[in-house]
Length: 111
Image 1 (tube, helix red, strand yellow):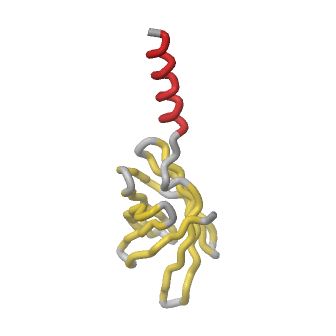
Image 2 (cartoon, helix red, strand yellow; image 1 turned 90 degrees about the horizontal axis):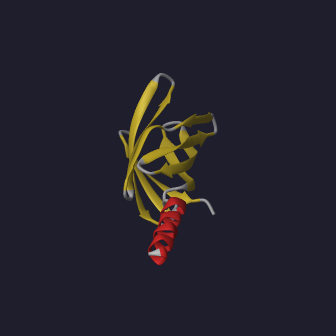
Image 3 (cartoon, helix red, strand yellow; image 1 turned 90 degrees about the vertical axis):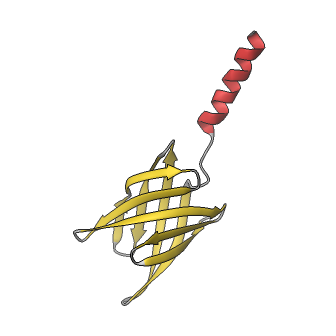
């Protein structure tokens, strides 16, 4: 019986400290009529909740309404009285694809 409790304790610890592969810093670029903009994201996954920030040369904002379902996730960003809904997917340990009404963007993990 003692071994069963020890096993359950270790399994609980590993799942508590398990980190989502989405977590971390990511970088990509977006082509716009005004030129190419670099975008930097920091994602943090807690269960099914996604939080973080996105940064551009103009500043940074928090991610809003973030949700995670396996390797897929969604969030919104607000700026200049606009809100843009985004969906994303972790396609490999080092690549994420983000989609929104302005097109697709590939992010690379910052190491």
